[in-house]
Amino acid sequence: MSKILITGVRSCTGVHLTRFLDSIGEGPIVGSGTSSSVSCDSGLSRYIPCDFQNGADVARLLEIANPQIVFHLAGSSDEGDPEALIKTNIQGTWHLLDVCQRQRVRPSAILLVGSAAGYGPVSDARDSLREAR
Image (cartoon, rainbow, N blue to C red; front, side, top):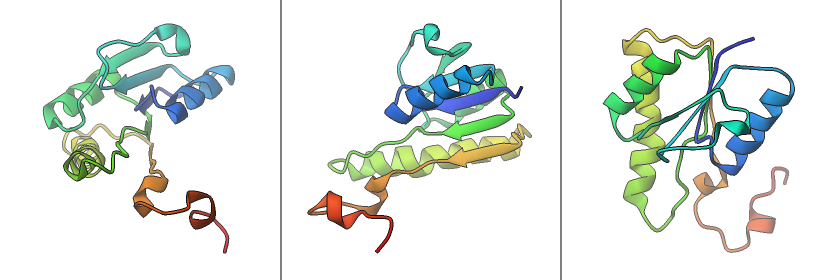
Protein backbone atom coordinates (compact mmCIF):
# COMPACT_ATOMS: atom_id res chain seq x y z
CA MET A 1 0.00 0.00 0.00
CA SER A 2 1.14 3.49 -0.87
CA LYS A 3 0.59 6.69 1.08
CA ILE A 4 -1.66 8.78 -1.18
CA LEU A 5 -2.32 12.53 -1.25
CA ILE A 6 -5.43 13.79 -3.03
CA THR A 7 -5.55 17.56 -3.47
CA GLY A 8 -8.99 19.02 -4.15
CA VAL A 9 -10.41 16.07 -2.26
CA ARG A 10 -13.83 17.70 -1.82
CA SER A 11 -14.37 18.02 -5.59
CA CYS A 12 -16.69 15.58 -7.33
CA THR A 13 -13.72 13.68 -8.74
CA GLY A 14 -11.93 13.80 -5.38
CA VAL A 15 -14.87 12.29 -3.52
CA HIS A 16 -15.26 9.45 -6.03
CA LEU A 17 -11.51 8.78 -6.18
CA THR A 18 -11.28 8.63 -2.38
CA ARG A 19 -14.19 6.20 -2.17
CA PHE A 20 -12.72 4.01 -4.91
CA LEU A 21 -9.20 3.89 -3.43
CA ASP A 22 -10.63 3.18 0.02
CA SER A 23 -12.85 0.38 -1.38
CA ILE A 24 -9.85 -1.43 -2.87
CA GLY A 25 -7.79 -1.05 0.28
CA GLU A 26 -5.34 1.57 -0.97
CA GLY A 27 -3.99 4.07 1.45
CA PRO A 28 -3.56 5.64 3.83
CA ILE A 29 -5.25 8.50 1.99
CA VAL A 30 -4.50 12.08 2.99
CA GLY A 31 -6.85 14.70 1.58
CA SER A 32 -6.27 18.39 1.07
CA GLY A 33 -8.27 21.40 0.00
CA THR A 34 -9.09 24.97 0.92
CA SER A 35 -11.72 24.11 3.54
CA SER A 36 -10.58 24.20 7.15
CA SER A 37 -12.09 20.79 7.85
CA VAL A 38 -13.69 17.78 6.26
CA SER A 39 -15.19 14.60 7.65
CA CYS A 40 -12.64 11.79 7.81
CA ASP A 41 -15.41 9.18 7.60
CA SER A 42 -15.14 9.61 3.82
CA GLY A 43 -12.24 7.15 3.56
CA LEU A 44 -9.57 9.67 4.47
CA SER A 45 -7.07 8.91 7.18
CA ARG A 46 -6.30 12.62 7.51
CA TYR A 47 -7.32 15.99 6.09
CA ILE A 48 -4.88 18.91 5.83
CA PRO A 49 -6.15 22.30 4.64
CA CYS A 50 -3.91 23.98 2.06
CA ASP A 51 -3.95 27.13 -0.04
CA PHE A 52 -2.13 26.14 -3.24
CA GLN A 53 -1.56 29.80 -4.07
CA ASN A 54 0.81 29.89 -1.08
CA GLY A 55 4.10 28.05 -1.59
CA ALA A 56 4.81 27.81 2.16
CA ASP A 57 1.39 26.19 2.69
CA VAL A 58 2.13 23.64 -0.03
CA ALA A 59 5.55 22.92 1.50
CA ARG A 60 3.91 22.31 4.89
CA LEU A 61 1.33 19.99 3.31
CA LEU A 62 3.94 17.86 1.56
CA GLU A 63 6.17 17.73 4.63
CA ILE A 64 3.29 16.46 6.77
CA ALA A 65 1.75 14.12 4.17
CA ASN A 66 5.03 12.79 2.70
CA PRO A 67 3.08 11.00 -0.05
CA GLN A 68 4.27 8.32 -2.42
CA ILE A 69 1.48 9.09 -4.90
CA VAL A 70 -0.21 12.46 -5.54
CA PHE A 71 -3.49 12.98 -7.36
CA HIS A 72 -3.51 16.75 -7.95
CA LEU A 73 -7.16 17.68 -8.43
CA ALA A 74 -7.04 21.14 -6.79
CA GLY A 75 -8.10 23.70 -9.34
CA SER A 76 -10.60 26.29 -10.40
CA SER A 77 -12.89 26.49 -13.40
CA ASP A 78 -14.35 29.93 -12.69
CA GLU A 79 -14.23 31.60 -16.11
CA GLY A 80 -15.40 34.87 -14.55
CA ASP A 81 -12.13 35.29 -12.64
CA PRO A 82 -9.14 34.69 -14.97
CA GLU A 83 -6.67 35.80 -12.29
CA ALA A 84 -7.94 33.10 -9.91
CA LEU A 85 -7.67 30.53 -12.71
CA ILE A 86 -4.01 31.40 -13.24
CA LYS A 87 -3.16 31.57 -9.53
CA THR A 88 -4.91 28.35 -8.64
CA ASN A 89 -4.37 26.18 -11.70
CA ILE A 90 -0.94 27.28 -12.90
CA GLN A 91 0.76 28.81 -9.88
CA GLY A 92 -0.72 26.20 -7.53
CA THR A 93 0.54 23.34 -9.69
CA TRP A 94 3.93 25.06 -9.95
CA HIS A 95 4.13 25.26 -6.14
CA LEU A 96 3.39 21.54 -5.85
CA LEU A 97 6.05 20.51 -8.37
CA ASP A 98 8.60 23.05 -7.11
CA VAL A 99 8.25 21.89 -3.51
CA CYS A 100 8.67 18.27 -4.59
CA GLN A 101 11.92 19.24 -6.31
CA ARG A 102 13.31 21.60 -3.65
CA GLN A 103 12.41 19.58 -0.57
CA ARG A 104 13.22 16.31 -2.19
CA VAL A 105 9.72 15.06 -1.47
CA ARG A 106 9.72 12.62 -4.35
CA PRO A 107 6.44 10.85 -4.88
CA SER A 108 6.80 7.94 -7.28
CA ALA A 109 3.86 9.34 -9.28
CA ILE A 110 2.07 12.67 -9.60
CA LEU A 111 -1.11 12.83 -11.66
CA LEU A 112 -2.01 16.37 -12.75
CA VAL A 113 -5.69 16.53 -13.62
CA GLY A 114 -7.47 19.16 -15.69
CA SER A 115 -11.00 19.62 -16.88
CA ALA A 116 -12.94 20.64 -19.95
CA ALA A 117 -12.62 24.22 -18.66
CA GLY A 118 -9.17 24.15 -20.27
CA TYR A 119 -10.88 24.43 -23.65
CA GLY A 120 -12.46 27.75 -22.68
CA PRO A 121 -16.08 28.77 -23.09
CA VAL A 122 -18.03 26.83 -25.71
CA SER A 123 -21.48 27.54 -27.08
CA ASP A 124 -22.70 23.93 -27.10
CA ALA A 125 -20.65 21.80 -24.72
CA ARG A 126 -22.39 18.57 -25.70
CA ASP A 127 -21.24 18.76 -29.33
CA SER A 128 -18.11 20.88 -28.93
CA LEU A 129 -16.23 18.78 -26.38
CA ARG A 130 -16.44 15.32 -27.88
CA GLU A 131 -13.31 13.22 -27.58
CA ALA A 132 -13.68 11.78 -31.08
CA ARG A 133 -14.34 13.74 -34.26
